[in-house]
Amino acid sequence: MREWFRHRYVSLVVLAVVIALLPLVFPSSYYYRVAALVWVSALAAIGLNILMGKAGQVSLGHAGFFGIGAYAVAIGPTHFGVPSFASLLIGAVLSAVLAYLVGRPILRLKGHYLAIATLGLGVLVALAITTESRWTGGPDGMPVAKLVIFGWRASGSDTWYWITAGMLLVGTWLALNLDDTPTGRAFRALHDSEIAARVAGVNVNRFKLQAFVIAAVYASLAGSALALMNGFVNPDQAGFLHSVEMVTMVVLGGLGSVIGSIVGAAVLIMLPQALTIFQEYEHLLLGFIIIVSMIFMRDGIVPMLAKWMGRRA
Amino acid sequence: MAEFFQFLVSGLTVGAVYALVALGFTLIYNASDVVNFAQGEFVMLGGMVTVFAHAAGVPLPLAALLAIAVAVVVGIGLYWLAIAPARGASAVSLIIITIGASIFLRGVAQVVFDKQFHKLPSFSGDTPVQMMGAAVQPQSFWVIGGAAVVVLLLYVFLERTLVGKAVLATSANKLAAKLVGINTATIMALAFGGSAAIGGIAGVLITPITLTSYDVGTLLALKGFAAAMLGGMGNPLGALAGGLLLGLLEAFGAGYVSSTYKDAFAFIVILAVLFVAPQGLFGRRAVERV
Image (cartoon, rainbow over all chains, first blue to last red; front, side, top):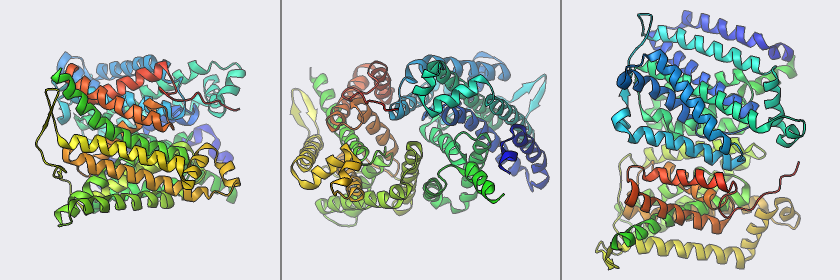
């Protein structure tokens, strides 16, 4: 059973099947929207998991890159007349460049110092977005033009369900492939012990930077997708709490587990939807659930299930 | 000159609060290696409980004491209910637990109190004191003085009492402390209670100036964490210096450069400092064992 889980493409096929079959059980278009939200968040979480789970570096400011992606597709078409799709790519490039430039000095730091530095980076991006209201609409956010590809306008929850699912599948496939490349092995080495990796000849700084840039691009693309899907952006998407939410998805699902990130995203996106019936108590319950799941599922949901099934099989 | 002095006082006032939050971070971090992101919620509780108890007719000093007591109970509860059961979890998991606790406490405050902003009356009136041409709010003296007293008491407690020394021993080496018969779990609970008390006091002192609401904790925790890092994590003097420095930076940055980017200065400076001195300003270089 465990071996079965380990096989790279099995999880990809399972994911594709789930994505294809889910709409059959959706009672209304609202569910398309929630599922699309899950796919988008999962994409960002997978990217962050490459950094946290595989390369062993924490980032508490990842929503900053998410925000750059989101605002790129908002600002590009509105202020510069750049088509949405080109803006999405520009956003990704911007995120990569920022991650590359800032990552060099930041990633020398360790533990809590790395946490505060990435946190600072995220807060600065969010502040810039909130403050430069001439470009971004300030705290109120701004509308985003619909995505148009070759004259075809992407709108409607079901359309976005398939677009985001496609992005997630590609993202998952790339992340799963990474494991068996020299880069993936280098990440694992530096996750286990940075010094040992260095001794073994791994260029530690280069690979950390690479993981950071990859994670930033994933987050940026996810941010763009969400903004285009919603037709609206606001600074919360770049805020500290969103960064925390992403980290929680990764850790809750399981550090290092690609499928875990999808499960983590699904749990954290669906919980508040389910909790809205409690409205008043939403935050109280969310906080409580986070605490309890971190205490009792320390390895994350997917690794815990895998271990449990491995023991039974 | 008057302008400069005005910025100086407001910087020191806010800085004193950051310093108290940072001190709370440090105390918990030293005793238990946990970075407690719920630290800002203690400040929120300090302010909110005082406001509501005062509104219910409790005299201000009693209301303040009650608020600090509530914060302490919450702090110790946080340790026993959320941190102690997670023994052996990774640093990231622990951070997420404390963030979960902060969301939880905010949720509780939202239900028990409300979502409005609240103000406390100043402790000794609102007539500004003229100093060096600047108008200083009397409450500023309360904040700065109060912070100084807290720091002094904490110092005396840690250096002069047996329990304080046990805290220091625990933070220096948990295993060795256990071996000489110190109940480290109690000490850690004590550190959480102490941090909560410090945060609660900060909340009581600052609320007449900055107002309070159920969600003021997040930004305060970020600033306090930043101040602690700026000074060097785990160093109480560093936390103090980091907090004051951060407050001054914000005040002067807002006054002379740009008030809209007030909150950015803190983080720009922290990034800059970490680039140059990765262990913070007063941090020791840790030796990494393989």
